[in-house]
Image (cartoon, rainbow, N blue to C red; front, side, top):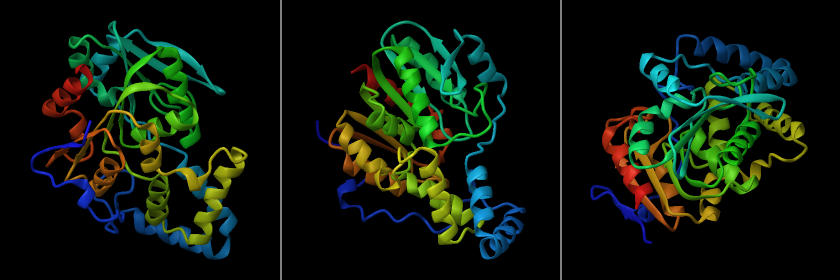
Length: 308
């Protein structure tokens, strides 16, 4: 299968190398707020006077996701599930299932929860799929207050084992990258992939965080080392390219990215599409980072891709 692109999009093979946007995002986890300048001043002083303390505080902050509240509609979707608690590591994951048939695993992003992709549940059920979703560690109704890339990817693998053979994995944002991480290092197998609003390298996520709070390169290096030490080398920053993970997966994939995404630049999606040999690429405009996963046209494209 060759690349299939939206008619209004030039081939990603012609795109230049991706350089993350230097502009501070107006939305999302790394958005500029009134408190950002004060946070940077505090970290600036710590980076100069107590770099070890700055690294430990930044490590804890980076590993502490916000908990997203659920509205009425997501709560109604969750109430229609077969919920269960799945042991994972030292904690438990909240897992949700709908329907019968080939399993499709939904993987939400950082600071989100299983219901963030809830608009896809009904159309997938109507197409004959069983849908499995979960709250990642320290997210939603799962246990814990802090988590990281290794724990998140391990959770993806645990739920994949629980779900049985997977027809597809649908990941959004951070969750898309962690699905790739789980596939490479935990052996998660599936027949098809859908990656929505993904970044192309895990280092980008950490570097955006460091830029947001004003860490010096030395302190950022210490933060990275704290993660490495925790896992005894399991987390190798030199191997955290989502491009390489996707290339190694070699699976039929649908990539979706909005041209006006203010959280993860559109160029990340282009570079992922260029790296994957069996890819369809859907570009949208005006939907941003989150609404793209709830858009009816996008959902129809996803269901059609999984059903054929």
